[in-house]
Length: 339
Image (cartoon, rainbow, N blue to C red; front, side, top):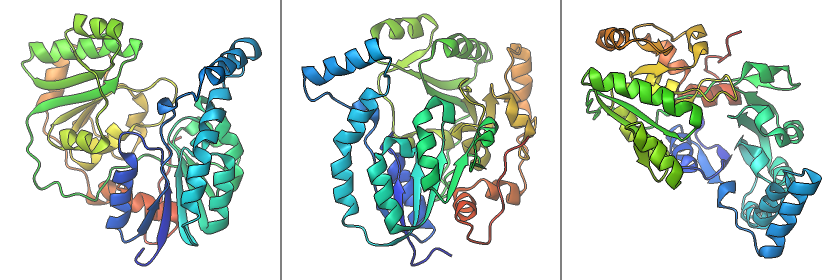
């Protein structure tokens, strides 16, 4: 359905996401031009004066956006230069367009037949995103409370379906990797201790390279991991596990990628996100909503047989259907958020 069509993929260059998106878009027949924005946490001040200026803006003028403006300006010219080599395109897919200067977005608008955006963070978390909405033909959000914003449409995350999973070697282990957040540590430590008592193999990694945090992680008997891994590496770990742990970020209510990885690759999930029970793929054999259950409760869940879902339910949340739906290229099954 997408053979011969071209897409500009504008995704922040975080944990290798541009490459994974590109591979799936090519898998469904598109010619892909990538416009990856470097992650903002890689931003470096040009000199001490620029750093001092940012400090003054933040301290005395409450301007917490000045660093972001410097970041956008620093990358704008390189991105525009890349765009000069791109002719007319059928689609543009933006993820987090607020990490691109408005001049870049306006230039893309001139070249693109259809501009699509998926904001996979809550709108309030990055409020600069509001000024980007008018440039998009379709602007999607994954948190129901963001649907109150004009010209937003509902959408979930998805699972990538470009690679074969025939070679999966289920290791009968529980898998989790996540950045350090203080509120998460006690919770993860509790689940880990109960899994340990039950004799369940597990890989639980908390990402941080700060010495104080590493000491805290070690004190809970958990493994500190100094570096993030690429999303492709993460997928390899996911498909070879049998149970995934998902800890909800309290700043939004949408379902994380981990939920859809479990759905797509037939994994059980332990999650703290209570909204998951509202979705059409929820089954208590497959998904345990964590609320400090006992080790006996946990053991009972792990012993339940996995309930294979109907094919049409899985396909609905695949990247192929997800992209067909946002572009309105039939056939597709519409994706909505539960009320």
